[in-house]
Image 1 (spheres, rainbow, N blue to C red):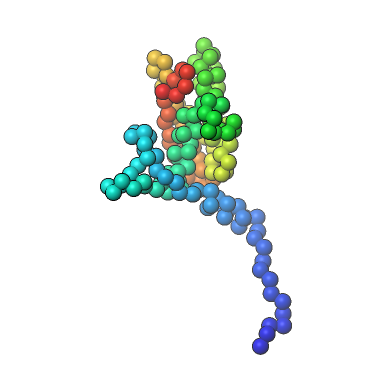
Image 2: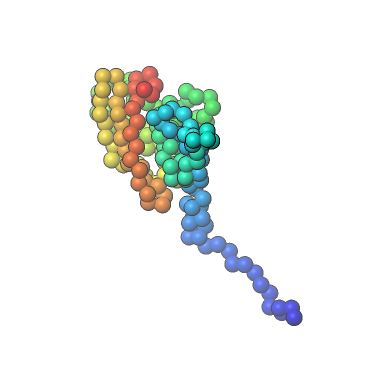
Amino acid sequence: MQNIFPTFSTPQTIEEANETKSKNAFKPSIYFDEKLGDFRRNGAGQLQTANGYEAWEQWCINTVQTERYACLGYSQNYGVEIDRAFLKTDRVVTESLIQQTIEEALLADPAGRTQGVTDFTFEWKSDSVLVGCTITSVSGDKANIEVTLGKGGTA
């Protein structure tokens, strides 16, 4: 017997849509090993996969290490402007500009995975600086990253 009452599916609420978006924002990727400078492989020589959270961390590190406008393979919205910061002679001003450009670059994540960037640390070497910061994802997870930046590009 047929149902005489019409049926329909209820639309998603805004909360459900945002929850779905944040879950889908963390997609897996190929694992890049910073120490090796190459993709990580298993014993059989096959590329290993990074889970969504690891892929997001790797994206953040790569973004901070990439000078904006220097690589034609990236859009003009990708990367940081470190060279401009190193033109300043005052370390306080340089650190402020580095912090600003890193925050802007990470918050401009096209997948919308980054919620905030805090707790910057700077350790100066002769011609480079080790920059550390804490990044917070939209799901509330935190990651600490450290990147060495130098004059004339990343070190």
